[in-house]
Length: 146
Image (cartoon, rainbow, N blue to C red; front, side, top):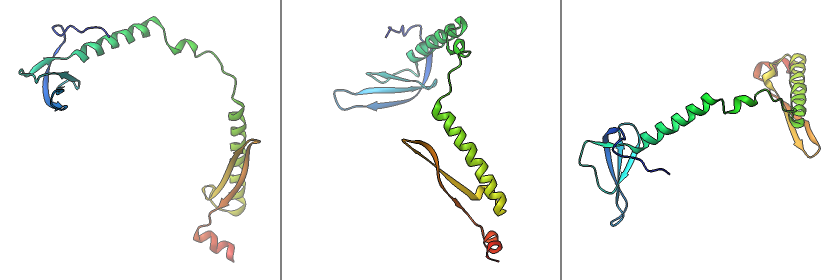
């Protein structure tokens, strides 16, 4: 980590000073108006102190901006097409089947598709439909009991 010149660092207002540690290893944490915390061996006697983290964050922002301007980044790899994952293909196929089943069951029973729950199981053989539940509200119960 490079050394920061405290004389060129921006001066920030000290909002709060927190004493931390036990006797012999006490440090004072100065919470500054910029949101950073400066650690010192003694509490500041002035209302403003230099913030070294502002210097570091500015340097980091400049570095990131130069990388963006130079074109280094993931944007150059967006045209590469990855092959589809077999598990995702199988899962999407099963989910389409589940959606069709839910719609057909709901239509046949004259209930909402949200009242039909279908479980999907995954084991070493692959993905399969494991079962399902149908929720019947009081109106549907009366219709079916007649």
